[in-house]
Length: 184
Image (tube, rainbow, N blue to C red; front, top):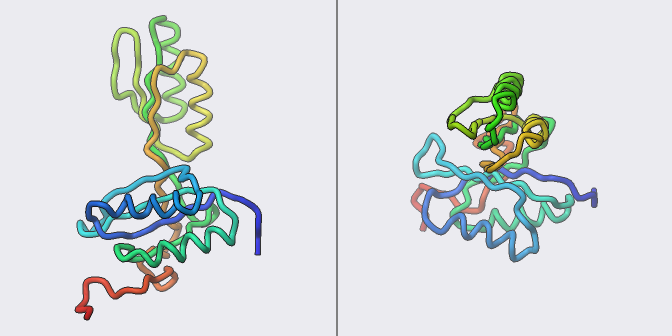
């Protein structure tokens, strides 16, 4: 087995109910893992939420975490997403100081190069929204840092597998329970 610690991305389908996120995050905490990125949202089915979790772990530990997640009652399915076979994006809002007209012009040029949206303008600030992968976001953050970033917020990574494969297909890691059916 590979004992190298790497960033691992898990997609988890769960019941869209209160307390489920707490159960999932407690599992990672109990096992001594810090969640690096966490994004949760509804899916095409309003009864189901999708959680995207990023954690640094080796192969043995990620297998343990997946097996433990699978045992949680509200978990429907889990899929590990490899970086090579998935699309990963994050939304970042960045508020930058622009008191100087030259700085404002330069920031607008940077925003244009990175294909970002200007979502708020004031006399002394610009707020930009950027969607992209970690490399794009880090590069833009570095370019804007010289102007003075006043505030920055990140959503956390969301990811989908490339191509026709989905979390709902036969390659998923299936849970123990038959949800939504008559279970005795």
